[in-house]
Image 1 (tube, rainbow, N blue to C red):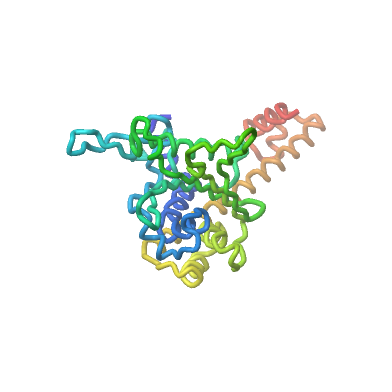
Image 2: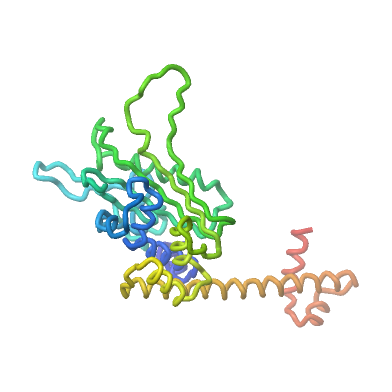
Length: 323
C-alpha cells in the first residue's frame, strides 16, 4: 500500500482518530502536571500550579521516532561551529511507517538545575500479541540511548538524564499503578559501585472501564478515566475536569473533549453494527448446515434463503475451513 493511500485509510479509521485525540488530551500541561505528581517522585506533594511551569513548552505528540538512528537530528551549530543535536520531529502523515513516541517532553526539577525526560504512552487495552512490559523496557531504553550526542558526548555518562516511561492502559480489570525500576542486590561483599540506580523508571497505570469513585487514592485514576472514557458524555467529562480538578477549560480542551466523545460514540455504533453482522453471518451458517443435511443443492439453498449463490458458496468454504 503506498503512503498516500495508507494515510487516507488511517485518516478514516475511527480508532486511529480516537488514539490521536487521546494523546492530544493527555498532552495538555494541566493533565501532564497531575500525572507527574502521582507518578514521578520528584513532584509528589506539589500542586499542579507548581508543576505546570516546570514542563517545557516543546511537548512532542506523535512526532519523535523511536527507532535507532531516527530519534535525533542536527538542528544547528553553536558559536564554535559545533553541531547541535536535538530531537527529530517528523511529519506523522509523511512518515506513517515510523514507530513514534506518543508523548515525550522535558520537565525541570524544582531547583531548576536539572531536567528529566518524560514519555507518556496510551493503550486502549493490554496487547495480546506481546508482553507489554517488554515493549516498555524498549521504550525506556531508547530514552536513555538516544541521549548520546544530544545530552552527553563521548564518555560523559554522568550527564545522562533520568527518564520515565509512563503507560496508561485502559479497559483493565482493576485500577492499578506500578513503579518498575533498577534494584541493586548485593551478592558478595560490600562494594559501593558509583552511579545512579534511578536513571530508568517505568510506571504502569491501569484504568478500568468504569470511572473511579471520588476518593484521594483514586484521584489520578478518576481524572484519566473520565478524560478517556468511552461512555461518559461531554457534559459529564467537562463537569469532572472543571469542578473536581479545577482545570481551566480553554476552548481547545473543550473542543477536544467533544471530539473524543463523538469518536467514542462512533466506535460504539460501529461495534454494534459489526456485532449484528456477525450474528447474521452465524445465523446464515446454521441455516445452510441444516439444509445441507437434507441434501439440498447450493442453488436451492440460495433460493430458499434469498441469498446469492456466491454468498452460499462462501459460507460453505468457511464451513469446510472450520471443519
